[in-house]
Image (cartoon, rainbow, N blue to C red; front, side, top):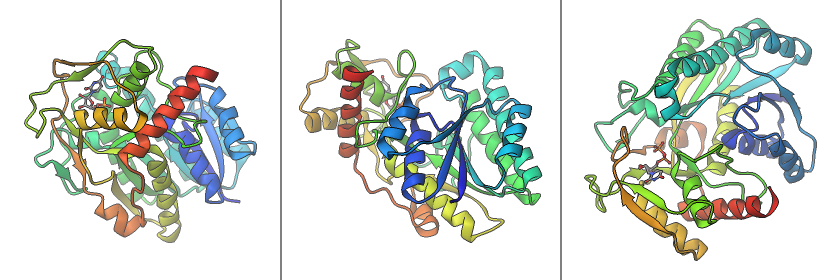
Length: 338
Ligand code: UDP
């Protein structure tokens, strides 16, 4: 079986990708330092997949730890690199933490890939590289704008590091620009586990629905959109996870390739639409209020994901309603079992 290293494999998108790798016949190996994930997720994964998963507690910024792993493991087919800090607000307060962690871990991995002749890299980038876009729908050719935060800047710089390394012949890469991942595995066994107060809409909303938080604040209702709330492209995490498998398969068929792909549904939904849909599919009434705009929020952005469809043969299949149902199943599981 082809061994695929999944850094950050205990995290939200990483854990779902581990499931899809197994479903596609790969052998995922998780590297995670559990700085923003919970070790219990591994047991959950093993229950879901009915098999053991190899896990190493490794911090990718520690080159020696990583080098030892590469040496002992051998015969690595590819790497899917998720391990990174991701809180926008924290990155503004502590930029060095973000530059150090997100960039050093990537550079360590690329160096070791080169030394061990591991060619295939799938990288988690973000639509944040488009900044405040000129058009609501963005293609991969839309200009990258100045990053609104150090976090966003680490994604932009990481993309450049990968492109330059590929030009130098060190690796083949698929850079995936995620839109807004939401939902959870339909089994209800894995999902998002935010530490502390969630920054993102759906985990906050499910905690309000579960009675853990009092009220959802909708950040602004006077944006220049049909209902005044921001528009995003919400993608089911299982669809997003599958995109990584397709990207890996594309790299296998195209040695030396390096390209960037939007991974979104191609549909925009407003915050109000999402909240109303959550209430409808789960038959729950949410305590909510309208608050101030959140600084730095773009009014509307969604993906043109035609390129991923054409080249990676990937397309989102699940709806926002599916994701909101699965997110609630997961929240309910957490309430009863965690
Ligand atoms: N949002 C909100 N209330 C919250 C969290 C988020 O109204 O408690 C809005 C936010 O302003 C944005 C959308 O939900 O329009 C998605 O925000 P999120 O943080 O989930 O993702 P982002 O698009 O910022 O990466």
